[in-house]
Amino acid sequence: MSNAFQEFFNGLCAKVESRPGDYTDAEGILHCGVCHEPRIGIVKTRTGEEITHPRTCACDRRYWAEVNAREAEEKRRKHIQELRRLLPRGVRDCTFEADDSPDSPISRTCRKYVKAWREMYRRGDGIIFFGSVGTGKTYYAACIANALIDMERRVLFTTVPDLVSRMSVFSDDRDEIISELCAANLVVLDDLGAERDTEFAIEQVFALVSAREQSHKPTIYTTNLSMDELRQCENIRRRRIYDRVLGSCPIQLQMAGQSRRTGAYEARRAEVKDILRGVSLDD
Image 1 (spheres, rainbow, N blue to C red):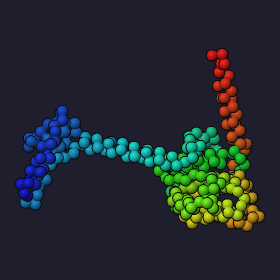
Image 2 (tube, rainbow, N blue to C red):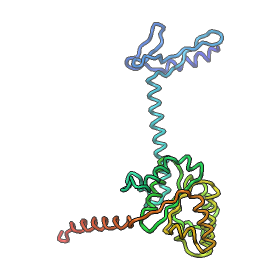
Image 3 (cartoon, one colour):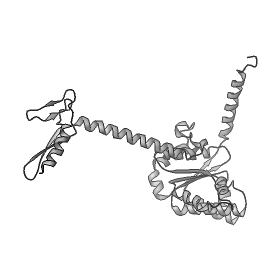
Image 4 (tube, rainbow, N blue to C red):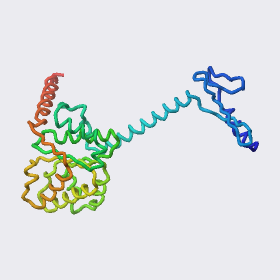
């Protein structure tokens, strides 16, 4: 071993500072005063020479493990924030924790879907929520989206009418939109059937649904249409769309009951009344 090599390791060992409680053994090796492991290691070369080198004790390893864990968690948290910013503002706070009917069959099915995500993703199995306005279709789709984002999955959440408008005849973004659609782990297409009833709009929806189907990744659809309207649509071009949607969504959840929005509206009206009641014009 060259003298330069020895000097290099000797220099490293010289930089190991003794901490309160540290001690040296009979051979002059520095030990940690807490875990009592050596902080200087010794290895033998093939020629029998001994090389001393800095060594991490159990305390050092635990410290750096905690540092690395904190850094990894911070990186994960920032990544989740970036993914959530891709969602529309109105759905970012929709979570299973805030669900007022956690024991309902719909809620339980949605939460099971998230727990079985790896298998659902592998199979490309999506969900279609159908039913009347305000029954919670978008809410539960958003709950699933936020739960998957917490698992660091990329989710695209948009309405079908908005997506079609982006693909207008004056737009050059069609290929980019479809590429973006196929890249996401999960896509939520809200308000299927609410797009304009024109040949162009139907053509774009067909392209979007077909592209997502061919990607073999899960898609969640929400629609105000009934299952009969989806299955027995007389418009042959729309029927081609709905056949593909139903074929890629083996989980078909009917949302029933009164509009959830009505209760929310009434609660908000009551809050505003309380606020205004406390405002004095005499100040």
